[in-house]
Length: 456
Image (cartoon, rainbow, N blue to C red; front, side, top):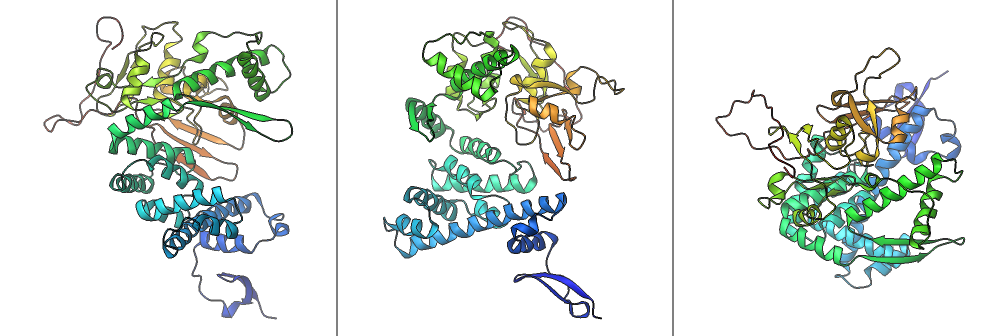
């Protein structure tokens, strides 16, 4: 009786006699993608957890590649039609989407093929999906072609080196915004001012008796407002309210807008947002390095405007001039909290779990090496990191492993199937100072708060 073996090829999966089986010409990832294309729902229902994860990864790569081919096809159709105004209408019929959606995809395709070929190549390779590429395109929409290509090159280099992880579209969008700011700092400032001037509130009718009330606000105002609503909702929840946090946030939001007292108040600190700014930028000597926790880069003139607000509190943050790493946080401040929490919040900026952007000041302090259970971990900034409540609890799950190195800012998360996802160091709170040629590379740094009161 002949022995048959399974062979995976472009046509799908087949069984051939063992002696006639060709040499394997496909990588495991390629084989997973071929199987994914031929799977039925019933077959997926019989997969193990590891096989399901492989299938999800394959589906993601296929989708990214398909998005890239669609972009090429739309750009080619646009070329064949001579840029006719009805190209989007023609494409919408075949894509089975609205004309508006087709127009957005057409615009994305034009930008990718003409100005961002390396991002498009990453899509073809299965690394970046269309949604993430769209956010990158959106970030570069207002710069000239040469600057967009510069951002494209730098972004691709960061992806290839692992300095940026493609695991979350927000990561790519933030990185693109930072690169755009570097490529065109003056234009970025003007665009930010125009956007802030266009702030508005919209009522978007929904389904099943619900509508969405959306407000476009300056980033720091929106972050403060949400933080305050969230803190009020959590306090109400702790009082025994049975509504979910989402329901509480929605109801408190509505009550505040209607002029009604939600029946709960929180400290002013609950609405605090962290704005990171180098001292030379604060003094107007530079226009780089400004970051709003949970949001990303801000143009320096906008950041200085926030800094000049009557309710702004200035803090000292001592950093290593060689690496930009946070070494200490000044103690002089209004309504002080613990020094360790302050330092960790400034240093980490956000939850240290890959893909999570909850601001660090609204996250938990997580002991990297536990205080109890015989681990004898110390309560210090060297043994602590910021984690949102959800990921703080995930750390104790027996099948999940989260490891964070506060020195390098590198975080690794291991899933129940053993797959690891790593994010590299976040941008430092302050950019490193250039090292003079005659300065020894093995020097150590130290420092104290300069004399006098803040702002320094």
